Each structure stands twice: as C-alpha cells, then as structure tokens.
Length: 115
Length: 116
Image (tube, rainbow over all chains, first blue to last red):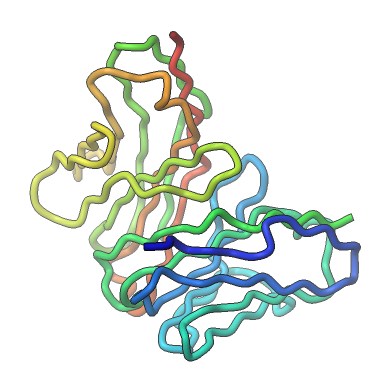
C-alpha cells in the first residue's frame, strides 16, 4: 500500500504570494494533520482534520488555513507568505482522529522556500 | 501545556556499542510517548510508542525505549548500534488529558552518528 503522499516536493515562492500544499493519506485513514518543520527544529503542529472537520489548531496566524475533502485528502493554504514561512511542511495521517493511541504516519514533506 | 526536551543535540557512538538517546517530557494528563526517526530529505518514520503497561517498549529495527514516570523520561535505546542508525531522532508526546485531537509535541531532535 502507498504511504502518505504530498505534492509538490519542492516549491519556491516570493514574499506576499500564496501557496497550496496537498496531501493524500494512507488508504483507510480518515485523519490528517499538518506540521511545520523549520530547519534545526522539531515539527510544530499546525492543524488536524478528521471527517472534514477541524479537530485541532496550533499557534499559527490566520494566514494559515486548511481543509479536508470527502476522499480524506487535504490542502494546506498559506497566504501573504513571509520569509519565516520557509520550512518543510509535513502531512501525517492516522486511522481515526479520536484515538489517542494511534501513531501518525508521515509523508515525505513539501520543502517551501520563500524568497 | 505539554512539552518535550531532548538535552543532547548530537550523540556519537561507535558501531557495535549500545546507544541511548535521551528524552524528558511534561504533560498535565497521562503521557502518550512516541519516537520517530528522520533520514535526510525524508519524512518522519515511526519507531515505537508507549501508551500504558510495561515500561520497556520494543519497536522497529531493534530499538526499545524505557518509560520512567518518576523521572518523566522516555529514553531510546539499542543494544548494538549500526552505521545505518545514523539519523535525526525525535521524541514526541501527546497529552492523554487533551481529548479530541492528535496533536503531537516534538522535541528539537537529536542527531545520532554511528562511527564505523
């Protein structure tokens, strides 16, 4: 079975632009979470979606938004890009969004560079 | 608020020697603890988790971790290191009292280098 997939792999944008990142969870997984990993740091939680509803939101500005589609895939949108948004954006999926015991499975990430 | 500390940015171990990567945590409820490994230009790969039960948890690739509630620690261990174990290791915690979402809080990571 395919793991979590993300697109694009790499992206270069300029300040002020908008970007959309995409994620497809493992087949059968209904929960998707997004994390931001800045170079030299651990991943920081941005959002979790389960059954198309937002289940959790991290400490990120409103420029960050996300949604989940009926097929459980997800998009992360970032508006008005800043240099500090340059990071590896990771998507993770899990079987359900409500079971504290579930491990999350991560995709390879999208490397966003803002110039 | 939940938090994780990985006190060592870098750990160097000779091939064949035992290795330990340290992690301490802070949560208000019951801790659910995870170890992930990250290879260059790759996402995070799940190694093992502690939910409840035995304090010694066994995971993938010969790794294990010891949960110590009194010391609020969850150290990752392996009896005999391989060069292929060289990677970036992250400890993460989920607060069992925070029902409703699966937010993981990660440490800053420990770069493990196995010296041939």
